[in-house]
Structures are given as C-alpha cells and as structure tokens.
Image (cartoon, rainbow over all chains, first blue to last red; front, side, top):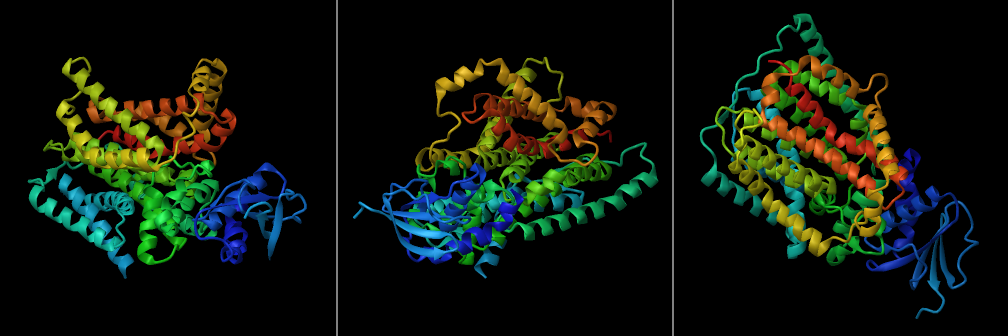
Length: 101
Length: 463
C-alpha cells in the first residue's frame, strides 16, 4: 500500500501525461487493464482515473475510446472488438471500439 | 497573491464567526491557541461551502465571493457581537502533582510536539499525494474533478465510477479545489497542507480547551496522549478525511463543555457547537451520524433534567437545543441540497431487504464485537502499551464528580456511545464483505472518536 502511494506520480500522472492530448477534455472513456492480483488490477485502474480526471474512466470497453493500461506486460489479452490506435509507451495504449463511428 | 489573500480572508472570516459566538476573558495564551485552532478548521469548512455554492451558482470570481462572505461577517459581527466577553474560572494546577513531575512534563511536551511535526513533514514529503487508496481514489480525485472539470464538474458524481463514493460530502475536496482555483494549478501541497492544518488544529484545540478548563498539566497530558498516538500522526498526513472529522467532533464537545462551564451562560457557544457539528456532516457521512447522536443526546438530557431524574447540573434546556440546531441549520441546508441535487447514491443502504436479513444474523454481531474489542487495543498502533488501556485504567482513579454531573460531559459521552453504536450498526448491514470492511476502516472510525475521548477523560481530571 505504501509503495503504491509513493509510485503515484510516476505510475499515473507522468505515465498518462502524453495520452491526455489525444483524449477529449470531458466525458467518459473506457478502460482495459492487464490481468493479475486483484489489488494490482484495482490500483492500476484507480490510478488511471486519478491521472486523467476530469475525464471519467469507466472500467468497461463499451466506449468509442478505450484506454489500455499494461504497466507490467504486453497487451495480449485485449478484447477482439478493440483496435489499437496508438502506443504511448510505458504500457499506455489507446484503443477504439471497432464498430463505433 | 490571491491565494495569500484568500487564506487571510478565510482565517479572518472564521475568526469573526467565532467571535460572534463570544470571546474568552482571561488565559490569553490558551484562548488564543483555542481561537486560532478553531478558526483554522472552521475557516477551511467555510471556504469549502463558499466554493460549492459558487459552483452551483456559476460564480467564476471566487476571490470576490470570498470578500463578500468576509464583509457579510464583518457586518454581522458589528451588529450582533455578544457583550460582555465570556469568562471562565481559571483552572489551577493539579493538586498532589510533584513539582519536579510537572517540570518533567513540560520538558517532555515540546520535544514530543517537535517529533510530531518532524514526522508530519517527513511523511508529507514521502507521500505527496497522500498515503493510501482513499486519498487518490476519493478525496483528491474529487478535488481534481471539481477544479479541472469546468462546467462539467458534476462528472465526479458519475454513476460510471461508483467506487469513488459519489455520496461523500465535500469539505475536504472543495476546500482543496477552492485554493487550487486561486492558485491557478492543482498543486499537490494544498490537500497535504489542509490535512496537516487539521492535525495540528486538533492538537491545539485539545490542549487549549483542557488548559482553560482543567489547567496546564491536564492540557499537556491530554495533548501528549494524542501526539503519542502513531496512527493519529499517520492519518493526519494520509490526506484522508478522518482527522478533519475528529477535529469537528472535538470542536463540538469542547464548545459544549466551554459553554457549560462558563460563568456567563449563553447560547452562542452552543450555536457554534451546532455549526461544528454541521461541518462534521459536511466532512464525512459519519459526521451526520454524530450530529444526530449529539442532538438526540441533548434532547434526552433536556427531558431528563426537566423530570429531575438525572441529578445533573442545569445547563441543558430546550433553548440550548434550539441554539445548537440554529447554528447547524445553514450548513445542514447546504448538505441537504448536496445530497439531494448533486451527490450520487450511496452503497450502504442500497439493498434494504438484504440489510434487514443481516441484522438478524448473530454471527455478524459476534464478528463486529470481536473486531471492536481488538481495535480498542490496537487502533492507535501504539508500540508497547495501548493508550486506551492507560486511559481506561486511570479513569476510575482520577474521575471528577463535578464533571460527572456536567450536562455537557454527559451529552458528549452519550453522543460518542451512540456514534460508536451507529458504526457497529453500519458494519452489521454493510453490503461489502464484513471482514474486508472492518479490516480497512474500523481503526479509522476509532481514531475519529479518539481526540474527543481523550478530552473527556482529562476533563475528569481533578482541579
């Protein structure tokens, strides 16, 4: 828990800074993260939301834009209905829903 | 520049508001610490409300709103300030305490305070975003939404992120957003500073009130007990809302006791206690429970006194209840509006039938009782002897008959007991896994009540 608190600036604010320019300033986007221990999965998601506020990041892929957060592995288990738009490095990806216009 | 102006305005506004409640004659140092501590916490509370109302009303010039509030309070002060100043009987030193022991206590007190300050600074630098999940998944996240959200600031209450507790009140995030707005950026030092201010304001409030009512020894012992509670310093830098909540709980009880023991009894301090109670409800949902508990305790004691079956000193009356409610009302209306027009739904009472089923499961009662007993000894994360055990042992040895009969003390004890019972009831019906919920929150709930419990204990110290 303490490591998590210390890692926030590097793990969220800094990692997601390049992505912000590619996202709308308001509204909601989806989220897909890597599998793992529940505590890591949840903290990755919360930190993403913290970094990208005031954009609402819903833990769902049912959005035209979906953020991919894979800090420890390659995005190999991404749902088929998503297509990668851009790799921002540091395990940060932007996906789009395939059938969205 | 506007930030400095806002801090000064906030402090001056809350100072004026407190002075409307009355000034304290005698004990200049203790009363100055008391007023500064109270003004710091109340000022942050006022600024959070100003920010929220400005957001609702679409006011963009926040500094102008701050100035308007300050001027309104100046006018109110000129028109309504109470005369004469409230006088208190000067508390003498504890009899029977050897001189050398008093000196030792005085020598130990300042290093302990310095150690606490050092610990706070080190922890704040180590955890600039707070220490723990709630800091960035609830309180600071909400502050970011409020400040960065522009016209879409209500997105923070979106049902798409229910885990961020959209029903939680806004004192902490709105005060951070207020200062960020004036600063022009979301500096991480602001929420850190807010919680640190509450930490030391709580210590100051405890010390000064005990000093005024029971003398220097009781004040130093009480403050040492709090400062020597590791969990209090940890939580005081975690950027959670529990220490600010404990500040308002203590403020309510301190103001009621000051009113009760003042030579010129009037309701202004009781009204200020009502205001502090409303701010506790504006800080966390537990504050609403505490407000209901202390109001119910006041009504109960009034009824008992009317029937002359309690044997307590006079000091509680229907008039006092009205003053308390009147002090709380303006900010309760803000809270009511927030809960009904802005906030999202809470999760605790979402499933009524399931909650009722849980209420009749004896195993849940046993689990909560066991956990509470365990946390009674360990919530402070003491190294050797739990502070609760020390106080419980001393309680029967030094309790004071005068305080036993004090209506404010009785009201406060009933309120804290009811609040603790309310916490237990919440665990009984929680929709989350019971043990998970207890594990990650019950120590903080105990900590919310701890400064008030210390205060009431040392208030029983003989003059």
